[in-house]
Image (tube, rainbow, N blue to C red; front, side, top):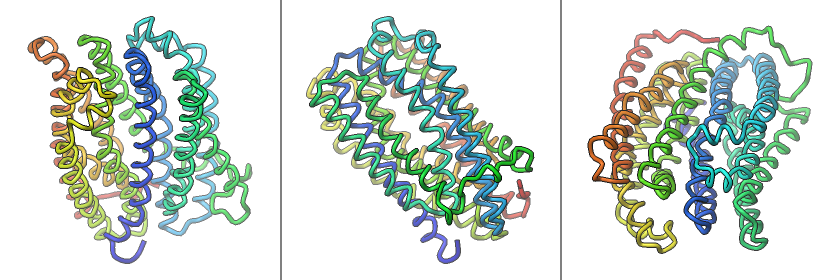
Length: 446
């Protein structure tokens, strides 16, 4: 982690950004394929994907918390401890993944009813959801493994593997749905198959003799000091993301007030914004690894510089992205609406407001990278809880009850208020974190 800090942050983050972009493209193809079905199919899949994200947040928490701790150990050159911590983390991930699948499968329909899906939407989406439950378990393990790869700076490996996976996913989706004329269930099957290839790659790597995280039962130690800081770091990340994903489920449920088309249009608007925010959000992972390793090596100045590099990179990406999206907003909306003017107008109405918050989310992503790297994961939890309970849901309820004449446009306004609010809050958190770092008040978490 020596050398020009901007080059280091970019070197670590660029493969993750490219990966986010390819993930986005794969998601776009799914949306287009599903949109060829009736409106309820699109809305049900959008809502189910948000439910999936609820449980996927557990893998994200473990991956982020574990990678922070392992990166610090590597920064201190404590390789044996890093290997034991990684092996223990992977074992925990497998146990949680199996437990989730076994618990969620028999509760599939009750979960969808609880999310306010209509019986018609449940009938269309139940098979899709059940396949996605298996994907949740597989992806949880994959997230932890890729988090460990990120902790050692091997983001190029992550990019190459996932490029193959995304290409496979796209090919399988087109074959299953377009050629074999399968249902939306086959879209989920394509995703599961693609994720399984990452699992196979992970198993091969973990069996290699010279691999830094080579898996061995002898390296599993549930009594080691790693577990307490893992829970301390991971749980706030998991809880924050879980509650935030729950907020999206609630927002989709509230969107039903504007008709069955509204959740689907909101999901498409999220996809459009995601072309930029997906890339800027990937900087959370890249910059947090740089911050963690420099913190472990006691290089405070470079820790601070890593954050400013992340801010600069996200500012440029957000500015360019917003400009392009607003320039071609009408054409993009029509593309997603499959040349249906009514659907396109609904999508455009929502995005015109939601897109205004993209820059604010770029600031939030850069701040999260700093927060994760310093180990202040409770702050990220506070951010996500505030984004939901302080900004998003109150804004949604106000728009529904006080401005009913605006219709589905209210969804975009609520998204903008939420995103702007969290951006401003992130500025305050960043200032506080920077002051702590500059006064050498960051304590070692391991």
